[in-house]
Structure formats: C-alpha cells, structure tokens
Image 1 (tube, rainbow, N blue to C red):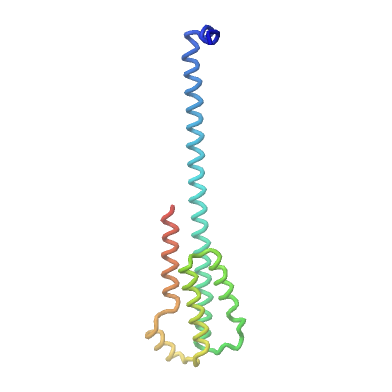
Image 2 (cartoon, one colour):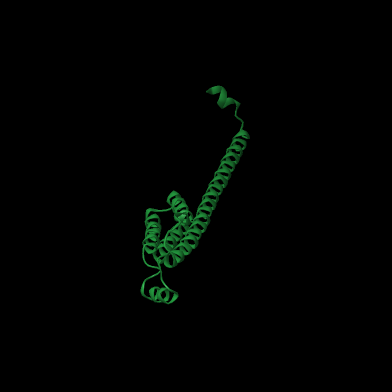
Length: 154
C-alpha cells in the first residue's frame, strides 16, 4: 500500500480523474445511443404490424364483401368461392385479437347463412340493405379499435 501511495504524484490525481470522467462520459453516451436505437426499432416494428394488419383487414373486407354480394344473388353451388374468405380468416387468426377473429367468423357465418336463403332481386336487395345493418360494420369497427390501440403504443 505504501508503494502505491508513494508513486502517486500530485499531477497524477487530476489525470486519473480526467480518465475516469472520459470513461463515464463514453459509457453514458453509448448507453443513451443504445436505448434510442432500441426504442426506434420497437416503433418500427409496431408500425410494420399496423401496416400488415391494415392490409389484411382490407383484403378480408374486400373478399367477404364480394362473397356477400354473391350470396345474395346466388345459391352456393361452388364452395370454392369461399376459399379466399376462409384463407383470409385463417391469416386473421394468426395475428389478431380474439375480438377481431370472432367478428370475422361472424361475417363468414352471415355469408353462409345468406347463401341458404332465396336469391334477391335488386329491388329486394336495396330494401334489405336499408333494413339490415352492413354485415362488415362491426368487423370494421373492431379492427379500427385494434389498430388505434397499436398506434397508441408508439
């Protein structure tokens, strides 16, 4: 111990303090940069998830709207017409909340139920549209709430 104390000159103490200050400053800067990059990466991931879900929900709405229009005008002679809708439902199940999945399933149940009813003329369809709510309205609303909750994480 006496060897260490004897070898220190009065000039070495400020030099040691400057060295420690540089190390602490560099470490603080590095940690700050790492935290900022991590937060940016998380924001980018959430933005990608939102974009992916917006596309998925949009595709589901387009496909099921076509299927519903077909169901109003035709009987279900070719179940292959629903493959696209069921494929999109399965994709929705992969990434969406239970509320969205249940709502999407209800849309498809409505389409299947509509296929089993008698075909409608354009006049009957117009009257039905004013009486009965849009089968995709609840789905769209639930999706909007889910997307808004994802955006709020940013």
